[in-house]
Length: 118
Image 1 (cartoon, rainbow, N blue to C red):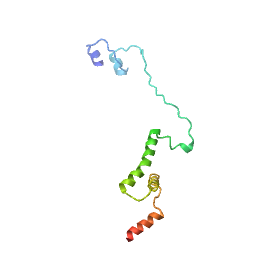
Image 2: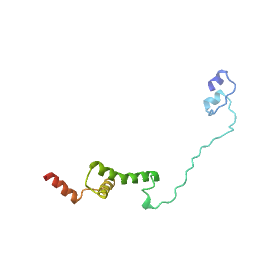
Image 3: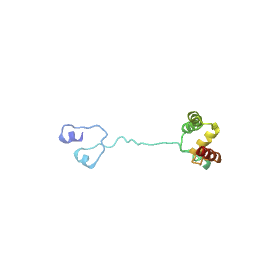
Image 4: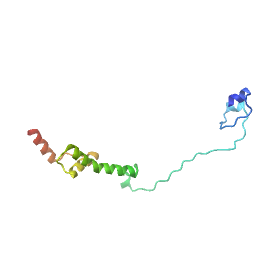
C-alpha cells in the first residue's frame, strides 16, 4: 500500500499500518483513532499446603489416568507373564519401580539362587 501511495497510484490506504519514520516521509498519517490492547487473564492460584505441592503441576484427569494404569498394569503383567506372584506382590513391585525404590527382597534372592542351582 505504501508503494502505491509513493508512486501516486493510490490517494488513500485503509489498513492497520504502523507508523514508522520512513513511512511518515512518504505519507501523511491521520491521528490514531483506535488502540487495541491485549490482556491475558488467569485465575490467581490459591494457597496449597506444602505437603500437596507435588500434585499441583498436573491436572486431575492425568492423575486419574495414572492411578487407573497403576492398578491395571499388575493384572496385565500377571496375565502376560503367567507368574505365580499375587496381584498385590506385582502391584508393590510396580509401585516400587515407579517410585525408584529397590524391589529385590530376600524371597527374590532365594528364588534366583534356586534357579541358578537347579
